[in-house]
Length: 320
Ligand code: ADP
Image 1 (cartoon, rainbow, N blue to C red):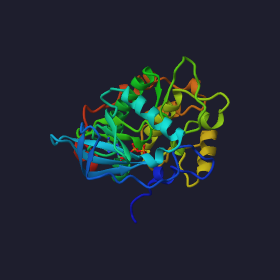
Image 2: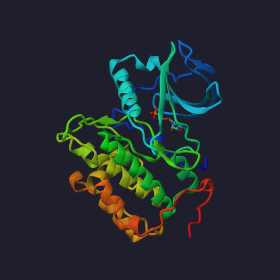
Image 3: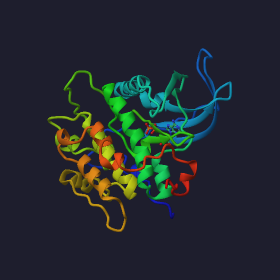
Image 4: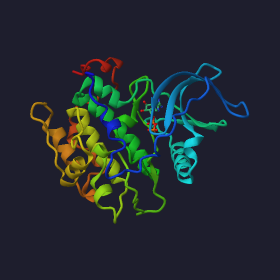
């Protein structure tokens, strides 16, 4: 009570139309206190739980030398179907192939009798969703800082033929120095030939691009991430996603009609409004490129802080 609802969680499994986000709920993993593999290559001690996703639990663990990492645990019970296995291997293959300062580093993968374990770079400061809940909204300089790093990570992924397809505040983590680390490649797709189009309807309702929902014949590509970047920018400076409403069908209608506005009681610059409006273009081929976004005057004529202090958890930093 008192705290804002977990919008992303609430809408993760909408009733209609269904998004094949993940499998039905299975019993969550309960790994042993000391996690080891068959050959004794890994010995990780659980020190706390970091979070829970659709079919995984993520723990903070320490290795024999006391180094801390995040460990994502998936039960083998949830991997009974061929489809579930294929999805997890695709996630691992894609995530493993990416190395960038603003992408959560994939370290190792191993298994025991009950679970599959993935060790990941530990992000000490939670997700941008957690931070937004505490702060309600961010100042424009803070938003520029987060956006520059997010767009850098996204540009790198696209150069490596990867579409993330689930960019949202809850999948953007912050390390100990408040640097952005994009994570959760559970819906990512690899473009294997130029011009290839993806057809699977997937994503998170608030962040989903119109062509994913309404141009299923033609499919979608890299521009879906650009759309999500527009939604993220709006959300950072306004404090809630642009198409947000209680039911998913209405969200989809609003996305279809490009129906959102900038609340008049929240003062944001005309420049940021103009940039969001440009990014949230219904036709994917008319959306700006990531380069064009970074060249926009909202970035080039505004303050981009070199770092964000950890005190930003509780109050707006002063960059003047
Ligand atoms: P799923 O793919 O099942 O949705 P996620 O990868 O999103 O799972 O992880 C679920 C939760 O675990 C996240 O929302 C976050 O709270 C936490 N988490 C995931 N990865 C990390 C990490 N590298 N560092 C810290 N916390 C993490």
